[in-house]
Length: 361
Image (cartoon, rainbow, N blue to C red; front, side, top):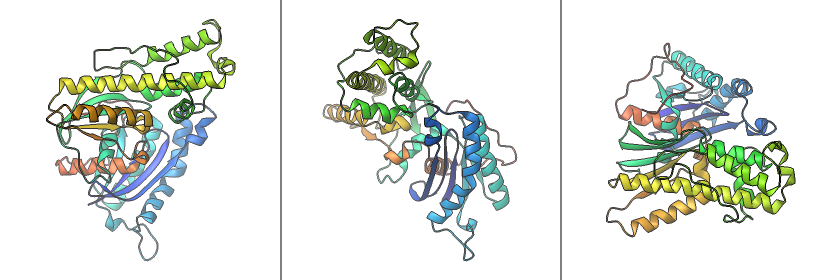
């Protein structure tokens, strides 16, 4: 079964064609990072306009890369079984571009349409190109610029949120700390690069909401800001946008390394508690853009290895390939495939609505 997946919930215009939920025939991602680097973050109206320009060329490129063209070099829709699109959550204008495109194509090409939750897609990125499928019950840690959640799954399409952020998402916190330190957008890669020569023990930061499965990263951001103000000997009233210029390169690296290590430690603490509370867990899935963080991958792999040496029932750890950590169309197509396998009916393309905010269910 071949599914064309469309993703446009934020600042990536992505289209992919995936076979049987795992085999990627094409994966086109048009990023807007260069556009928003100058702004230090995503501007919704500009994002939506950029999606409008990129989405149809991305569809055609996906067919081209999948070698699904007719003799007259047209997109061969006879080789596509269904269309999937992200309809929630995300930026309203960005979602609108993707869903209108998918709805129109579904109507014109007479294809069933599947409306997919963005966080489901991130989870199912771990099924792409994976010969060993995650087994149930599993725990998924979803970490991105807009979301931080721990989700328990007893089977396909059965989701229970057992932990969530009370304020900022971890990826959002990375972006805000990068801005304080004068590092470029997006913050995740910039902080990791700066942290490479930094001391992760140079500064000590709090671990908010310790002992629960919920997260709070707003306080961590404030703690870093206060420490930077202290280090630069500037009062709280001093503009935070001017602090970075007062830091030495080594101070900046030390702040980046200390913050990154603290954020990773917080995430792993929550995972430890989730596994302790759910000892039947067979698989641990890490999903979302922050899953690409190499410090997190290293430390979490080390923890699972140590844990498995003590347990009779081993836990299998899954990270998506780095190219599938961020937003992409392949994960949307994969999530839709497992909806089809689970007998979830398609969506009426004439009635599909977008929802900028919603919970996974």
